[in-house]
Image 1 (cartoon, rainbow, N blue to C red):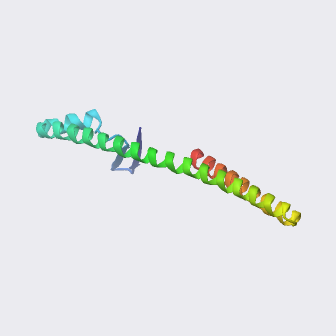
Image 2 (cartoon, rainbow, N blue to C red):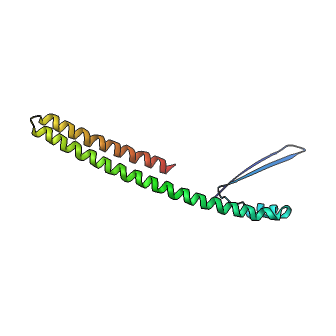
Image 3 (cartoon, rainbow, N blue to C red):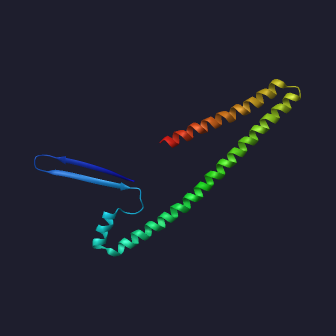
Length: 131
């Protein structure tokens, strides 16, 4: 995808035009490669080779980042599940040993905390994906 910006100004005697093109592709546009080939043909092959090596590097890094995010999310789910189980079991244990209000409060606080964290995480992820 490319972003193109053009600015033009003129008065009675002079015209001025500036054009800027930004691309997210690691390879130059064909017209620029043709201009490069016109005065340095050996550099075209070098640019293509560098673009290939950069693409391979990006793929490797992308795979590593994706694996890290996957492990982080699975670990977060497991820890949240264990925290919920510990909170409910702990609250039940306290409730069975003579403090029903305290046990209910502890279990409710754990479940509420997990629900709030889950919902805030969902809203932050939806904010990020909408940008």
